[in-house]
Length: 82
Ligand SMILES: [Zn+2]
Image (tube, rainbow, N blue to C red; front, side):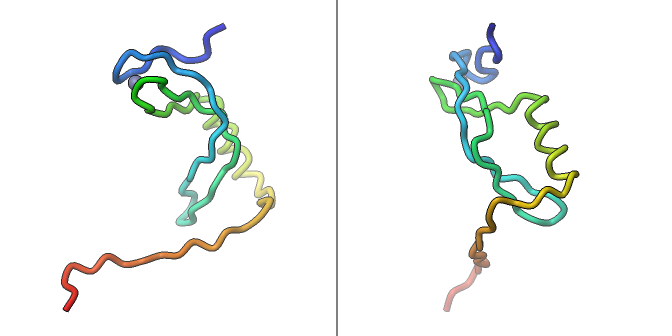
């Protein structure tokens, strides 16, 4: 059974890998680990299946506690640096 169509961009074969994925949810940045994603073996483009996206949404809505919290440094890009 093939889970992914050939790559939308280059026509390459898409294989499933478990990868971390950053998600923005209500102004917060979250990281999901081990998300099954299709990765193009040619160009590296990533694809998320609709049922996986839905599952992530369900987990977020259930307000499940995260396994751990990361502190993310934020920088502001400044146009002029004197
Ligand atoms: Zn591709």
